[in-house]
Amino acid sequence: MRATLRLTALALCIIISASDIAAAQSQPPPPEQRNAFTPDEVIRAGHHFFGTVSRGLAEVVQTAFSRWGEPNGYVLGQEGGGAFMVGLRYGDGKLYTKNAGDRRVFWEGPSVGFDTGGEGARTMMLVYNLPATDAIYQRFVGIDGSAYFIGGFGMTALAFGNIIVVPIRSGVGLRLGANVGYLKFTPQATWNPF
Image 1 (cartoon, rainbow, N blue to C red):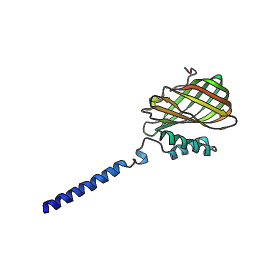
Image 2 (cartoon, rainbow, N blue to C red):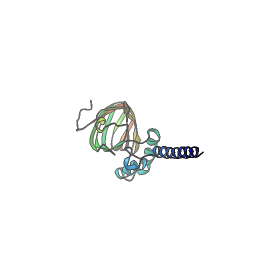
Image 3 (cartoon, helix red, strand yellow):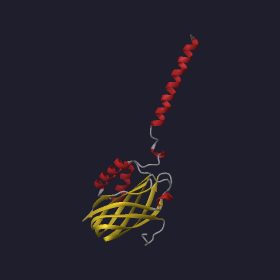
Image 4 (cartoon, rainbow, N blue to C red):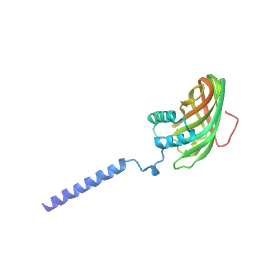
């Protein structure tokens, strides 16, 4: 009888301990141990970077998070571009990550489509599934639609394999249309978009 009570007590202790361990493992790690950014962290960085156009930024960031989840990096920078059926875009900024360091990046890229005009934009790019900071230095392909008359936010998605880059632009200028193209990220500035 005592042996049965001891075995029952031991079994209950094991079950309680196992459920505590499982509960602890299912909880997300504290923010300082995570390598992904929360929506609040990205929106705070965007408010600081973009300034007064913050309401539109919050809506675009929430849309990106609902579609792709939490990014493990983001880029803040500026770019300029223009097009008349064939276009070019150039930019520079800084890639921020939680646990792999920060890195200066440049980007350039051609586009082809029904696209006319020019714009200058402050750009935040959310980066998903980035395995290492050097993995940003490649070409990301996508479709872009622009409608800048005075200003506003636009969001597109570009991909290479499993890595997704989501540029969020607050542009000023006169540009209207849609195009297909890519952005090539490089560690140094270059004029060659190819």
